[in-house]
Length: 447
Image 1 (cartoon, one colour):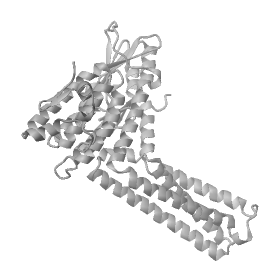
Image 2: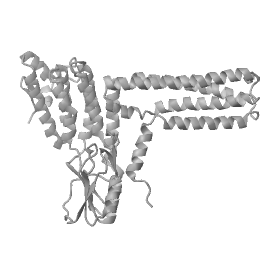
Image 3: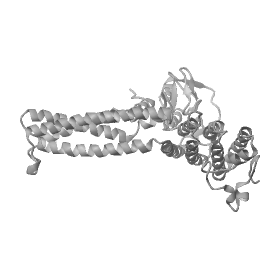
Image 4: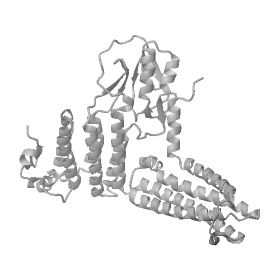
């Protein structure tokens, strides 16, 4: 009898990582367990005389602690509601999926519920006639720790939800995913190899609708090697599929049990997640940028800040070789899994296109985009430069179409890493040789 599939385990793990009840529930159990342990230790631990309490004092203190913890939990819930409103108004609703994973938030809630359970159980002991002096002292220490954690949480809430902080966190998370994917479980994507095409094939169809959140690459490769199959995935991580959609083709002597196993290695969910999808990090940052560029907000400075961190992520992506199809090999060097993968051009289009379109009338955005593309041209692999130059040409076209005044057009054609206000690139003594010649018609890179 087989256990739960890899996709089911992945889904449970995702649910627990994003839940706000699992860790606080463990905290409640821990607090109750510590209360029972404290009652066993009462009388065996010598305390100073001034740490002894009357029954009425201990009852009042523990009642106040329990009530305070309920109030603090309500405060954290209120902050959570404010986070939702802020994400909907100024950030991206898709960021909420990652905010729910915040470990400090869960630790704070768990500490509050643990202190509440601890104080509540000790209150019942006071009713039986004895006074848990050690427990009352421990409850006071716990409240002090809880208040310190609350201050840390408020500090996180105030600072970590600024658009620039969100963009920095997304860039960091996206780079971590890119680095992890480069050596995922020891399997490196390569260009497809020439292979004999098996005649028989079996389609693996989706049983429900959902976004592909992750693929168990090693599991599919091992299954295909064991069964002498080749699995060809038709979708990449982040795609949304419908019931009956063909997820993959199994070529070779596959049977229905193989299709069930492969289906169980493709995790579907209601929305994308960042675990194997660095493009999702780009999507969130771009959403914040174009929201800032909307006529109702008109905040080009926020957009330029988003471009800063988009550049950090794009440089990490552009430093790696990418192809339109990834092939994963078994230990014998045979292709066992192929799947469509995003090319460098796909990532660059996602990061730049919408910002260029919605920010075409902002000189600040145009200048910052140009500086980003020039930096990418100098940094990414040589084979990725053509896509960068194409984006520079598109940016020139947008600027020429948006600015009819020659002086304003010339201003928008310059590169500036602060949008407007940075040092002039032409001030560099070798600006002509290193940065190309700029004029009203755009940028001309040296041969």
